[in-house]
Length: 373
Ligand SMILES: Cc1ncc(COP(=O)(O)O)c(C=O)c1O
Image (cartoon, rainbow, N blue to C red; front, top):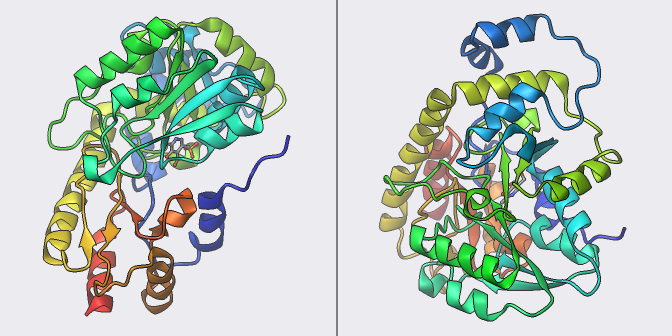
């Protein structure tokens, strides 16, 4: 299979571990292992201390699948398939679901694998453009108008990376209903679910809205445990999971045994885990609101409604310049602060992603301030 380079991941491969401040990460600051183990209950503590490092069940540890299922209203443990991160889930799902002659619609700008894997599988891909002038909102009517007879899948990432878009409950249900009526499968990339800002309600999970819809989840973002590399698909359509399981035999076969137990600990303690993430993201959002209000000469800021990223734009002729590539290059050289220019999303050269999940955001923003001064 030939597939285009993943531009964002290539950029991170170059910079992520070479800079002082990653001001553009999409994950939340990783949990310290020792703190996580303190959240274990009697059962998971015993599982951890007696863990044997053999192969694990290829569908995922039964207790982990059962715990993941509790994140949904209509999902049983057998409706869950565990993967090495959301990335493997996306790869297996799109590779096995579409091919030549099929049409797929994907929100854009966005996480590249959501459309690139479908393209590499031979499908025709239409990108559903989120427009800044509409506050990056999901235009359900325009999206539904782009359905074709051969449309198989609509992929929506919400809360959205990089814009922080979160549809309203009404829009989300309307889209799910339109997909169901047209026989189009809704794939909901919900890796930022539970990070809704300012009391915005979490949307119903895609998998709960229709029996053919699929939810993608992961421990990396809201649960702040990217290093576990545990993600999943949840759907009542078990034929899809069966197809994915057959491809997974050629990718990772099964999950990492320690990671499964640690993910189970994290999910069982999710109130504590999510409260920490929301606290970090909320505090950072306040810093950014203040910064962007003060530096409106340089940036425009559509405040994200959910997730752990935002997507500011450079003001033409402003003090930060008009090229996000150039700004990112100069900033990282001068200060060690990393931004993610919108060219890595194949979008334009006027935006950049900013990450809300890291605990050094305030220091990084101080450096950006000093740089602009
Ligand atoms: C929208 C979206 N989906 C999936 C992923 C993949 O998650 P992971 O790297 O944890 O597999 C990401 C990661 O940035 C993402 O932003």
